[in-house]
Length: 75
Image (tube, rainbow, N blue to C red; front, side, top):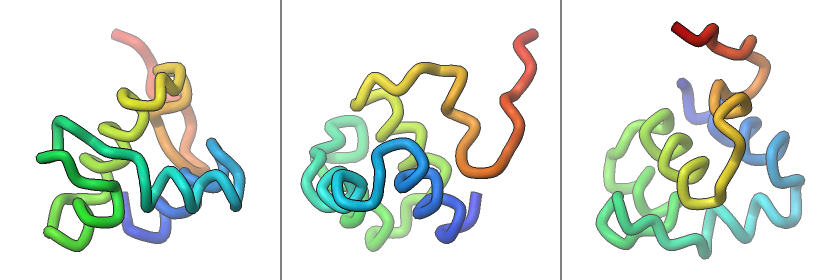
């Protein structure tokens, strides 16, 4: 996942305004008590940050695939 895909996934899932709040204010315990923005600045991959956001915000797993990508088939 590229950074641009991460940003689009945030907007697609949360909307423009709330997505900004999520990106800057949500505390991701599993990523060292960082916000998504701080985690990205620390060099954590956008995909890892996206998945942490999904888990923390209770995004249904069917939508974890991210922006513009088809849902991943279940094994």
